[in-house]
Amino acid sequence: MRKCERDLTAFEILSPLDQAVPLVVASPHSGSCYPADLIAAARLDPLSLRRSEDCFVDELFGDAVDCGAPLLRALFPRAYVDVNREPWELDPTMFEDELPAWVNRGSPRVAAGLGTIARIVSDGVAIYRRKLRFAEAEARVERLYKPYHAALERLLKATHERFGTCLLIDAHSMPSSPGGLNHRSAELADIVLGDLNGTSCSPVIVDAAEALLTELGYRVARNKPYAGGHTTLLHGTPNDGRHCLQVEINRSLYMNERNLQRKAGFSMIRDHMKTLVQSLGVLVPDLVVPK
Image (cartoon, rainbow, N blue to C red; front, top):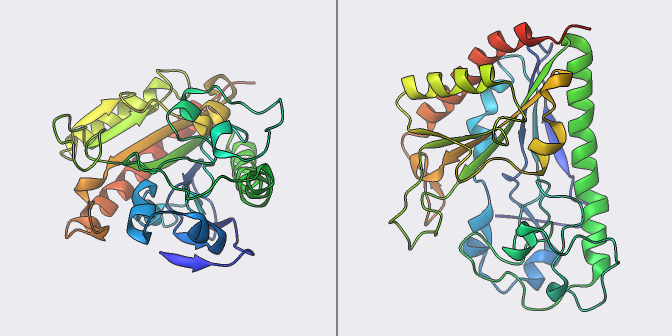
């Protein structure tokens, strides 16, 4: 964990000298720079606070730049503000003041404690020792959420205009069991590909990704239990030549989930993600929508 001050930069874009493929990779949940106000308000120790973090996913996809694709990575943690949600999915029980009427209080994500401002970490433990004020949530959305999404939209628009098509790989990680570290009875696949049940991405892309990853030795699932989130819904419009594929990697493949340390096989997973980006980079240009 890195402790950061209030002038925390929202994101970083790693760009190739010349974008060679109609791909953009985004890592929205790998940020590890924790603002001082979050640390002060949290009831959790630093390690527990990081349980929701997609540790090292930006590194696993870091070679996308060598493949000619830009990589956008959030620098702030998901526990602070989650950019894979609508901007105003908020749990009113977390706030000491009344929320505006237009806030989405009833989404499944809010009910699960994982709204735009999360109530819990992925282990189900409450984050905060006190109630927040709406002004705190508003500041996080304005200072971090909106700049991240504006940057992502600029990358996708420029890519689509240049190539006539675009694929966004929204890169994530998932715990090895949906119940967390203490529940191993329902282990997940190695990689879950999410395309909002066939609506956010051409099946040609998803089929190719599944075939390649299976050939590399992974157990691959589609859409269960992760079909996609706000980003997939927002940017996956295949009829317009804009595709979005969410990729969830099982954390147990590349890291120790208890101490959040990389495993020996980390570099192999990184090489495989580079192979995935290279392969899809060759495929996507053929999916230009005729004007």
